[in-house]
Image 1 (tube, rainbow, N blue to C red):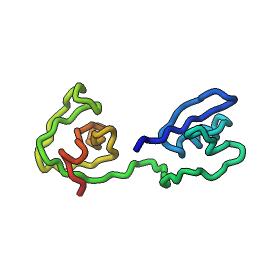
Image 2 (cartoon, rainbow, N blue to C red):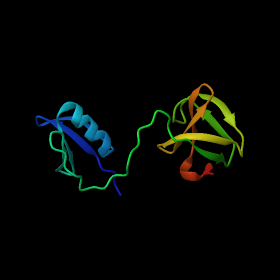
Image 3 (cartoon, rainbow, N blue to C red):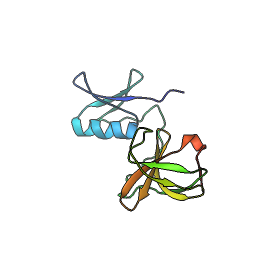
Length: 129
């Protein structure tokens, strides 16, 4: 199943393409445009209309929701979500990490200095507690 792309349009020109309807609505409100998905207008800034595509509620908080995961093998810790990114450490099998988000198959992990990344592998390398 393909992910939907929401296009923010103003005066017939594309402003930006986004992955969530909520983000697209916010940008449309800021720019006074409309949101188009699959060739249909799903939201207009001056007169909001319900979307034909159900979206999960998104809650904006100052702190991201943190979930704990246990590593299933020894893993490299990297500064960016890429196997080519610099390694900043190693986490042993069984280590429990606080995960802020999963991005493109990588765990975004809180640490004392900020955020780092550990390969998730679709659950191959870590399990949610």
